[in-house]
Length: 263
Image (cartoon, rainbow, N blue to C red; front, side, top):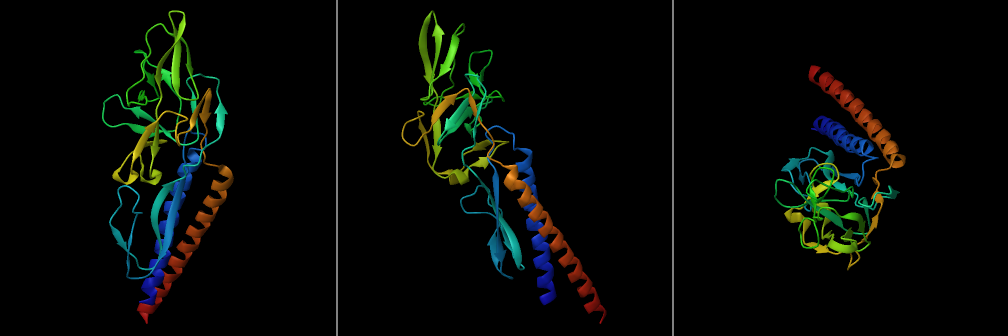
């Protein structure tokens, strides 16, 4: 029994550290990705013979329980929703959210909106404000923002008001909406820096920038990734060392098991 527990502890330690390494490697790969949010892998020690949920109650798609043989167990990967640094670009349709909120964008094929902090927008051929994947930026009423043909001098105010010069006069075209999420950890990843709402997300509130708890917009800036190599590289090194120690312990336990069976 003791030998079986030793094997379980070492094997679960390897599994958990491998899982951490994958999450950290993904963060490292996205340190320069606009609007990216770092992942926070959460694990826990377990007691032999008890069932533990392989996921948090607030997280979407919680897997079935795992029967713990003792050791460590991965629980969930949370999102670090801390605001990233502002990076100037000079482009009027590059937008940085200073404070709370997510941009809502609509996929070309329809369906529900998806959410992002990546503020790289441009006009498509039909005059619609879209992100890099061609998804339409939605206004405070959940509708795409379309500009008339021939407009010039497009500007976006801190309150999300989109205006342009039309017929020699500046005209307000629409107002960008920001979505506030009651439980951000309930968001489910839908690609790099993009999320969809789930039942665990709770209430979604769409507000104009600067109203209530919604942040304001800064035109000509983008939000940098909040993943930092200064913290990721030491964490990765620690996870790799822990994996190697657990692998060595597993090897020793297997050798002892083999000797015990020969007696």
